[in-house]
Amino acid sequence: MTVTETEPDTERVAGFALLGSLGKRVLRPGGAELTTRLLDELAIGPDDDVVEIAPGRGRTARLILEHRPASYVGIDRDPAAQRSITPLLHGPRQRFLLGSVARTGLDDGECSVAVGEAVLTMHPRSTKAQIVAELARVVRPGGRIGLHEVAFQLHDTHHDVDNDTLEQTRIRTELTSHFRVSFNAMTMADWTDLLAEAGFMLATVHRAPLRLLEPDRIIADEGVVGAARFAANVLADPRTRARIAHMRAAMRRNAPSLRAVAMVAVRTG
Image (cartoon, rainbow, N blue to C red; front, side):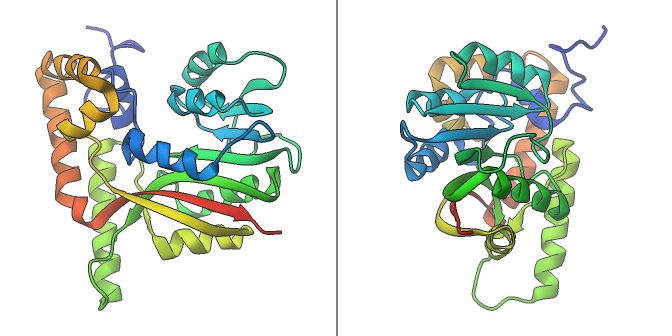
């Protein structure tokens, strides 16, 4: 049987692409609830010009557009995202750009709000820095950014730095292996430093357990019907069922050391 765009190679495809092909619509680390908290903190209004990086299937884009911002730009290098986002957009002040989130082509200070979810965690720190620097260029002074990513959770106040580093490396390696996509979470101290280097001051952080593939989280994110459809698609193929089980097990093993985080930061200069 030939693998097609809608029928991915179960063993090799990136985990999030596989989940999307099975009907998982919410692919954010902290689920729909943490996205809602992020948008509440950003308080997008009719005077805001919004840029969303890597909007993917458009769940957050819909929520942003419900706030009726003055303008909206979605930027993603994936043509599938373009197909998802374009039907949501109406009028000359709502548009989609197919391209790199590290080199958007937008004007300096073009937006007052930038939003990105599950974008930076997959990149090494150097690429994270490039993307955040680009956001600093396009966000006006006093503007804000909202990021929904993954952070390492330190367990107590007395840390062995070498052991922490080894454990973080082990977790990155294991989740990269199972999800077939780079997993490069950082500590909250590192996230704060990354933002500060680009001229952002971290204002608020909301945390949630990393439970993307747990049944209750799937029901909360997808609804009963959507969760049932996803489960049926997973169970229909033994290879898919095994792959999802391995991904869930890896997340469960490492869940105590990880948190989904929603960060809002303000452009200071």
